[in-house]
Every structure is written in C-alpha cells, then in structure tokens.
Image 1: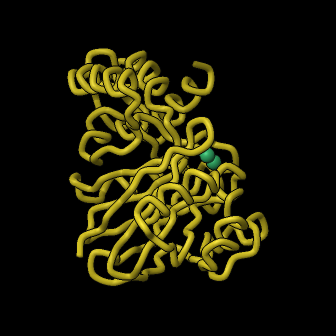
Image 2: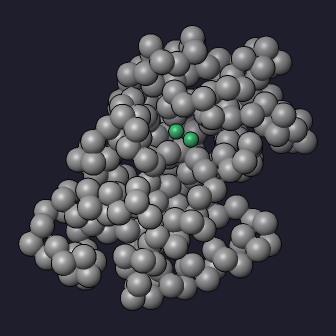
Length: 253
Ligand code: ZN
Ligand code: FE
C-alpha cells in the first residue's frame, strides 16, 4: 500500500501533514487542531501517532487537543526533550520504524533548532523537513550555526532526486524573490518562480516539491555551485562559507 499524503494548511502559513500507510495514520507536526481534525474527519482517518519535528510553538501547540480526541501517541526529537511538551516516545538520529512504504528513518537536521529532525520515508520517496530545508529556502538559524545547517542540508541533498520534500511553511513566494536576487540567471529558477506565482494566485500550496527541483533552484543547496560563487565574488571560498554568506544576506533581505 503506497503512502497517502495530505497537506493541511494551518495558522497563517504553517503546514501539517497526514501520512496514511501500512502502519496507520500519522500526523506530522501539530500547528493547529481544527484544520487537522477537519482533514482527518473528511477521510474518516484516526491518527495513531503525532510526529513532531522540533519544539517551536507553531509545530506543537495542537498536540494536547489531538491527543485528547484520538488518544494517539506523540513522538519527537530526543535532543529537544527539555523543550518539548511531554511525549510518549523520543526519537534519536538514525532511528527507524514502520514497514513497507511506511518505513521511516529519522534524519538529524540541526540549525533552525539544535534538535530538529526530518522524517524520511525512503521507500515512499517522501521527506518531511519542516523548518530545515524549505521550498527555495531554509529555516532561520535560531539555535544552530551556519556550518551546522550546511551539514544538515548537505545530508538531505544526497537523497534520491525524486524524493518529495514537504516543508513546514508557505514561504515560497518571498523565498523566490531572494533566490532571484542572488541567482538571477538560473533558468530553472526563473521558470520555477513563474510556476510559484501562478500557483499562489490560484491559492495552491507550493511548499511540497521534488528534491531534484530544490537542488537546481534553492540557493541554500547551491552554495557549492561555481556560477553562484562567481556571482557572489566568492570563487575561492569554501561551500560552507558561501552558505554562511547566503544565509546572512537572507537575514538582511
Ligand atoms: Zn520553527
Ligand atoms: Fe515553524
């Protein structure tokens, strides 16, 4: 049974995801109870587990309400145990679970927060990145260093290109403006930005993208690209140094 993945817009610009597979239904992140409950009810789905990516309030605040309603388990990153609400299970980097297309592994992606994790479903080619790798962007470095985030993104960049990336916020349109400002001649980026503009005009989500497209267009994944380095006047700089510069420019953008 392949995974059935549902994107659930929450709050202003957050996303939760429903993942229905051979092991039952999981909710990934819990920004807001009402839209998540509505999406579950519309399908007659009962979640068995809530899987949290990191401790920020806009990813955890609906846990109590969902747990009360469904009696589901809650899991989250071990490394953020002290910052998270109480959980039934804590997940360490590299931990695996599930079966068949529901097989999942925990990938550590520190940077935005120190214990941030991504949920990777290798068979189903799905990757839930929340505020680490984002569509045309990456999360702000609230807790980690640029080197840490560059390592995290580099780890994700090695996954198969046909992996679908599901990120935590609808920031794509503003990320696109920044991306064009530092990579203005990238033809893949230019055509992607046109698609994003059209999708947003139609009210469609744009934070769910194949990794191959991110690799071709997301400046934060392209810090090693010679053309981009040249554009920044950083031909001889290390990839991590270029990433650091791009992240700093985004913070000022
Ligand atoms: Zn966050
Ligand atoms: Fe967030």
